[in-house]
Amino acid sequence: MGYAQLVIGPAGSGKSTYCSSLHQHCKTVGRTLHVVNLDPAAEHFDYPVAMDIRELVSLDDVMEELGLGPNGGLLYCMEHLEENLDDWLTEELDNYMDDDYLVFDCPGQIELFSHVSVLKNFVEHLRRKNFNVCAVYLLDSQFMTDITKFISGCMASLSAMVQLELPHINILSKMDLVTNKKDIEDFLNPEPRVLLSELNQRMAPQFSKLNKSLIELVDEYNMVSFVPLDLRKESSIRYVLAQIDICIQYGEDADVKIKDIDPEDDD
Image (cartoon, rainbow, N blue to C red; front, side, top):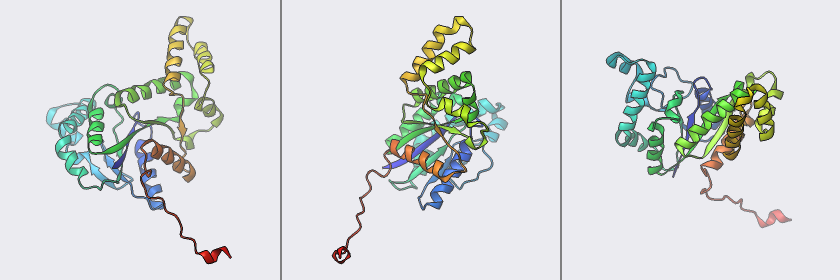
């Protein structure tokens, strides 16, 4: 069985930086991890690219040949990937062993993981290839300094969770850039009643029923739980990776290693 992370989130949320830091951490601790680029517009990487969608289709080529803009061109590229799952992706996956660990660095266009079926079908293909997959949703910590931004971020993450139907980890990225961590702590595990009160204070009275429905939805799907990530701290990276490993059951089928004890040691 293989293991995979699908790293998603809005543009600028730090997905590629997360992938790079995760790869470096695993290299340091002697753990094998392969990072896959699924962004046809990417140009520079801080990690070794194990698989690259640009070998199949490039955004620059699509824009030039078809006269599409960046957004339309990106959707075309991802639909082209979807059409070639049984060919290109299957051939690439055959280069890896059953217990390999892959991290897919995805584009930041929100439609890909909330509205269209491309990534959902991509995930289904990985599952057919016997991969356990977890969605890792990154949200910029700036969203946690304002109640309305926080709710917006939760709704986007919830949309991705419903669309992909995967085990889901929410990560609060760029914690190293936060100046006042007290503002962040208030939103990490907030009480629904507190959220509703703050939201009602910010919104006009006619939105009170909508606010109540939004908070109930967030609470019902347990979307008010975020794991903060500070890439400066190895302990933070290690904790996040451990949470993801639990979701995809990584290492659960490994043999338990018991140290042999020499009877003479009892003396």
